[in-house]
Length: 499
Image (cartoon, rainbow, N blue to C red; front, side, top):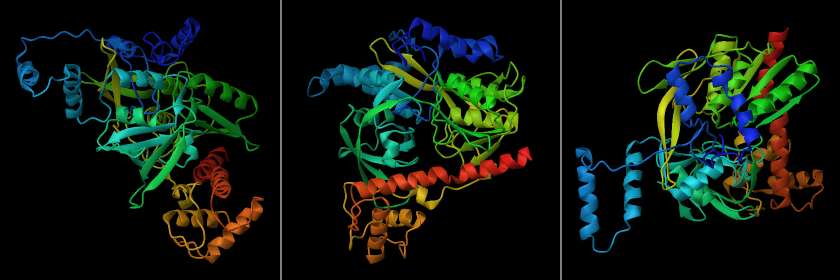
C-alpha cells in the first residue's frame, strides 16, 4: 500500500523501503515467476468489500484506453450511443452516459467485489487507504441490493453506537441506499469530523427499524491490541491487516514472550481483512517452514501455493477467535493456523470471502476494481460464501446483540418499544430485577432503572435517557469484555494444552 500513485499511506521514501522489507514475497513465499509478477503489479484487495475502510497491496496500474472501433462485439454499444447522441430529445451528457455504460458492465458481473468507481468515488477510495480518515468507522458491503455491515472498526463511532455485523443500512439522512454500490453508499455515509449522520438500520428478522444518529470522527487505523494477565495467556486482537500490523504484532509478542508468555489467543473477530502480505507474514510466525499458508488460484493454471519460510518463531499453543465479522485476510490467517499449525478455532462461522481483486486506474482518474482469482486454505478448501467453521462453536450471549438504545430518546413508565426490551435484557444481565423481559416499561422496569442510576451516582428518576442510557451501554460493554465466552472457552482449551 505505497504512495507511488497517491494511494494509501502518505509514505516517505524511508517508509516505502520499510514496506518493501515487509513483503513476504521477498521474505517468506516460494512462488513461480508468474505469480511473483502478479503480486508485484496487481493491487490485491482482501477486504470484505470496498467500504468505509479498505486496505490494498502493491501499486495501481494505469490502463491506457484505446477505442478499437473495428471490434464487432462493440458495434451495438456504439450504435446505441450514437442513437442517443443524435436523436435523444435533449442533448445528452456524454461523459455520464459512458460512465453509466461501464458501470453497467460491472453490474452485469453480479460480483459484490467488482466495481467501477468514477473520479469522485476513486478519490474517496484512495482516502480510505490512508492511515486515518473521518467517518463513522464501519466496513460495509453491497449484498443482494442491500448495504450490509461487515464489521465496525474498534473504538469507532459505529462501534460505540452499537452497530453490529450483518446490520442492513436502509437509509442515510433519509435517503434510501438500497440498490447502491458500496462506493456510492460510502460517499453518503462519510463526512467531516463532528458532523452527524442519521442511519436507518434493520437488524436480523426484526421488523422494527433502528434509527441512529452518529457523529463522525477521526478513525485512526490502529490494528493490534494486547493484554496478558498473571496466567501468562496473551490475548492479542488484530482489528485489520495493514502495512504496520506485522511490526505492531511482533513488538507485542516479543514483550510478552520476554515476560513468560505460555499461550496465545489470536483474536480476529470483526476483522474485515486487509493486506494479503500482512496475513502471510503473521502466519509465518506460527507455521513450520515448508508448510502451506494459502493457495492463490488465478483464471488459468494450477493454484500457486505459498509456503512458510524462515522457521516459526513461537511454539506456544494458539487458539484463534473468529466470528461472522472475520473476513478475507482474517480467514486466511485462521485457515493457515488451523490447517498448518494445529491451532483451534473458537467462536462463530466466519464471513466467507474467498476471492482476490485488482484495482486499475483509468487516465481520467476513475478506478476499475474487479475479481482476478480466488484463494484456498492450505488444504485446498474454498470458503467463499461459506466461511470457516470453528472447532468450538460458541454463541455470543443474547444481551451482547441487544438492540441499540438511542440516548436521545426518552423511555419511561408506559412506553412500549423494542428498545425497552433491549434495556430490560441489559439490566437483567447486569443483575437488576426486571421481571418479565418484554417491550413494556412497567413499574418493575422503572425500579430497576432507579437502582442502576443509584449505583452509577446519577439522578434517580427511573427514566432511561441521556447519561443513564450511555452508562447502561458502557456497563454492558464492560461486562461483555470481562465475561467474553469466546475468551473463556479459549483459555479452557489452552489450559488443557498446557497441562
